[in-house]
Image (cartoon, rainbow, N blue to C red; front, side):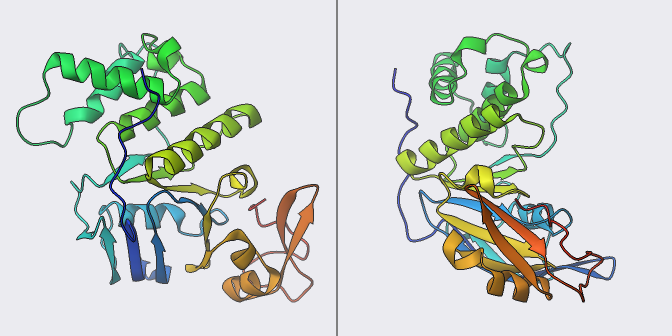
Length: 279
């Protein structure tokens, strides 16, 4: 059985955001956010806590209407049922006694939003088997999802999101609460799927370092504003200082990237030398 997913059709871009702005309760959350993601690209959505990453993902999913700007997914305007996008949410509560096997959770992703007649049971079972194999979850396919480790649950949730054959996969903080080894395995899995199957992956995180081995582009959010490009183009003192609105330093230490506040005066409640939780 092949471990690959069916190839996706290529195009110039899968996701295009242009001038997106969101204001909630009088507070500007996103301001003039623009970027594009092409097929096969692994993109990190990076920024400190409260930067607006989850709000941006909600906009991209059609769950939050922007006050300004446009978003196209697969060349089409957003809708709640746009099958071009798959989603792995930040928090999924899976109780240990939940009577649901890993393979059952993956199967729920087949017909959840699909109109018409569901796939026949044989085709459904084969699709689930192929997807479990693609994410390396065959060995625990019949285990209760609530009894799986954090890394195993993430594999199952990724399979659930991918079985609908999206061209774009959005993940909200999937590495939170995972150990280093599990994080590396999940990032490697997503990087392989993006490259081999031409699925655009957008993964939000507050730490850029686990993504560096596979990341093609970075979208950096701070203060509701965005800078996008390659890591070398974006993660620079001059670029991030303009983004934050005050001086920050980008440090490279033992193969890791650290972004820290610079000397006084420092705005937004950060003290001098304070790490900004992005590395």
